[in-house]
Amino acid sequence: MKVVRSASWLQCRNPRPRPVCRVVVFPHAGGSANAYNAFAQGFPDDHEVWVVQYPGRESRLAEPLVDEMDPLVDGIAAAVADLVAAGSVAAGGGADAAAACDVDVPLVLFGHSMGASVAYETARRLAEWPGLVRLLVVSARAAPTVSRPGRVHTLAREEFVRVLRDHGGTDDAILAHEELLDFVLSIVRNDYRLIETYRPPDQVQVPVPVPVLALAAQDDATVRVADIRAWVDATTIRFDHRVFPGGHFYLHADPAPIIDEITAGISRALRPHGPVPLRGKQDSAG
Image 1: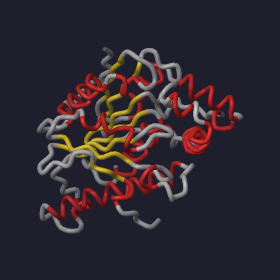
Image 2: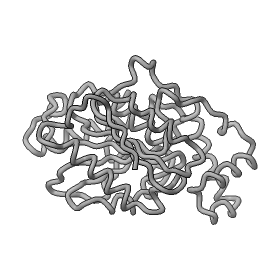
Image 3: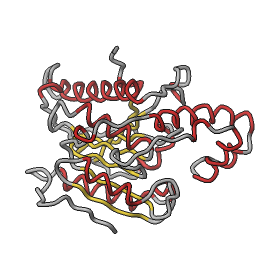
């Protein structure tokens, strides 16, 4: 696959000269980079936040939508590797710094809903560089071991709109504007097709050598808290879990406590000797 320039896939929301880590945010189905502006700005000043821009929206409007997981993740993973290599070269690490894993700035992946699965698959791609990804944070998405195929993307227009309205996250002004709604529906339906036809790898291949922090909303009608807790099987290192009030888009209603939990997870992952080894994986509900 042709390596795509990082500028196409990744947008930095708060450049930092010496960040303690880089957080890469993966939007939900139908989501875009701009939808996470406020979320990105809520991180501490020493955390540099990058947001993935999927093809076919905002700055990439002229590009075709991608409705399969593999090509989407291939592009993102290549862009992240470019980003890391560019940072290493700037720091004097040499052009092959990414391959050598000589990375000064730790990488954290955060994905919400569909973005959680995309972030997980990206972590799998980047696992060939041990230590590159220091933490995977997944939000409002069932674990790979319990995720099931879906048919929402096949629904007729009225039924599809009803599902979006029930799930929340789509502005009422868009739902009331027929022409704009048609445009948005094409993007959302594409992303639903991607995530509902996505087949995780065999269970033997599922775990990644990265700590996982799984976040859930107690009133989320789209995914059970138990299915989010099942992310415990997706890591070979450490698992932490939190439940927050709200529905599926809880993180946009009140991002501060979610960001606090993520930064606490980052602090645990970035301890001098890495995550504290546990006899059992920790499932911390709160």
